[in-house]
Image: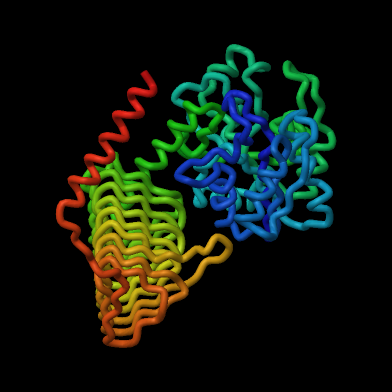
Amino acid sequence: MSIALVILAAGKGTRMESDLPKVLHPIAQVPMLVHAMRAGAALDPARVVVVAGHGAEAVTRAVRAEDDNAQVVLQTEQLGTAHAVDQARDALAGFSGDVVVLYGDTPFVQPDTLERMIAARADHDLVVLGFQAADPARYGRLVMDGSDLTRIVEFKDAGPAERAIDLCNSGLLACDAAMLFDLIATVGNDNASGEYYLTDVVALARARGLSATAVTCDEAETLGVNSRAELAVADGLFQARARAGLLDKGVTLMAPDSVYLAQDTVIGRDTVIEPNVVFGPGVTVETGALIRAFCYLEGCHISRGAIVGPYARLRPGAELAENTKVGNFVELKNARIDEGAKVNHLSYIGNATIGAGANIGAGTITCNYDGVMKHHTRIGARAFIGSNTMLVAPVNVGAGAMTASGSVITRDVADDALAMSRTEQQNKPGRARKLFDMLRAKKARRERETN
């Protein structure tokens, strides 16, 4: 059966105190909305419709960046969850299959939970996701009769007996598309909030003789985020779970609580991560690498046996081959470091290819930007780049070549050649003393004139 996702992402998130739409606030370097989209992607949906409202342009950009085929529809007035889902009606006109409703501010629902909801659809017309709440607080309650879900009661409308129920509503549901939109068309707003509740479709379905049930999950999967404090809690939960997963897979985290992971971080077994390392989006680390303390990595690939850091920054496009070394206070961007090459100290290597076995001396800079365009630097295998070399791109240094320390290299260097670009040093006896005397006298005159 085909599946369509409808993801609700229209809320402003007033309690976030932010100009950024609530669903775009990040957890593990990825917007909450994208977490929900990636969870739903496990169902291999034929259609994805995101219902936007506040900050719709920014939400649309985030959706497009994740899934070019997803549709974004607008909810210009926030009149309740049923009204929000109804905005997808036209986008799904003619669609035959199930609709799964997700929430952009509920980022932790797991793919296997969604799969269990779809499996339950084989025996029921409508499936709702519920959870046993440690503190039911103001959640809507699921009223069950055995395995049958009879209705959902919002907290504001619940009586004492219903408020005593601890099986709560997550808001997620699955239903045949045509049936869902037919039910929504009959939802009213005669309730304490004057809103069109999606939860009302359960009672309406039962009144028609249709069946409904609830699939349950761990409460942590249903965590919603409505404030900065809740965002911090959610991010902490993600980090704890992700770190535990890495430890279980054979990764050594020397100080786990100090390592910050992105949603898509991939690290191979027997890799060692020292304290205070931050992983941005798009990082893959292969087996047996060493990431030393205080590194920041994003958009890069680190191969087996590589050593990075301490205090290194790898930016998007950095590609480290096996047994390479990138040392302290080195920054790489859009650079490939071939097998066995070393960039040990205090260097910037951008838009460059460093050949196998090459050695890049301390303070080396690839001068890759001319103010308008970026240019490439190529350094051959086994080349030796002397400390404090400026490589003005575009420029090639051949295999086995050498640059003298302090050189500015503006022309290609042939294989096995030595390139030097320094003026001859001149020593002037006694000149320093005379210069200092002159400068001190000048300073004294200025001070007298000021006073």
